[in-house]
Image (cartoon, rainbow, N blue to C red; front, side, top):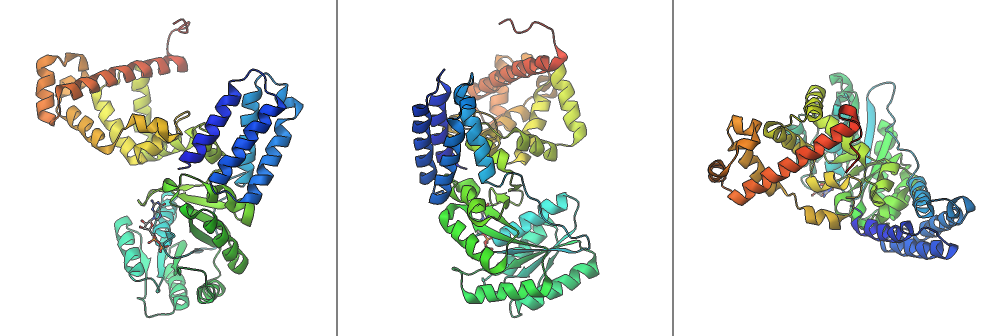
Length: 442
Ligand code: GDP
């Protein structure tokens, strides 16, 4: 996500950071580059103008130029203004005191509504809520079936009445069903159209006035850039939105919609879709997004993902082992399996500081196939070998390679990587206070 924008901004700021002294002309040049990068990213023209003017005004102030690290101060200003542009703080869903909370998802066909309904239902269930999904999209062929299949996979109930029924009646029926079955959150999947038209808006307004949703969320496709922003503007005018779910951010190299929606419409982005899988939905945090764009990483999201995929006891045991440097191949295997649950490796690595930009990631090339090889190699080791990797000498290496369908070279590579990471972990745990003093001497 945002690869091309991130790459351009990061190269601009690298030049600034390298300078001991920054002049007004340097700032002006950097701002010219920022302006071009944002326009190329399909950010709304007015938004770009305002943004650049604000940053410039602050950046040529004395507190920045006279500081000891002017380059970094400029980046700090840009970070703060990016956060403000995207809405400042993250916005939550309005939950009703009296259940069920009704959340209505609207949007054009293909934006990702049905998918987002199921993602959001799963997300809310993880927060302890009891969702019911309702299939009110009687317009797109197979939308009802699609929601039922997703509901089945996730074990979340779906209310439907087929396609020959008025969506307003389905929404009303779903409401009654939620109350009768004790579901505290009702998610309505409504129909879209290829373009905004009166029929669509009329239908949505009818549903809105009948069930009075607590939250109306517009689903838009990030890859459509400024079109997404225009769609959001119209929906907001006609229907009144509480927020936006921006989908397909995983395929959006530019980021124009993410950066313009709030500034243009006043409506906050509440969630982003980062893939087709049910887990690929994240709450939108403007500060974390700004950090990712500027290559500062997003360690907070990474930690949350790790916590969500690993139970606390397991995490504590692992930390103990790391501290004592007792980490072996068995733990490594467990960690790998946990990593897989956190999402695609490139997305995970993208959250690490300094690794946000895809060019760097391309060199890493940790793909799923490679992960499978590594797993096969470890599974071909005996328990003793996994616990004491130093036992693995030539004949054992050949046996493991044969057993896992890999080569001795691949086994060697893994042993080397493992050894290096163990050393790194040891240093890391020493740094965190477990180790000897004075280790800073090289
Ligand atoms: P609807 O017509 O608005 O209900 O759209 P769907 O939910 O059927 O989604 C349309 C297509 O977009 C499907 O192929 C989804 O898998 C895909 N999709 C939805 N959200 C995302 C996302 O965040 N990332 C990616 N890569 N694909 C998505």
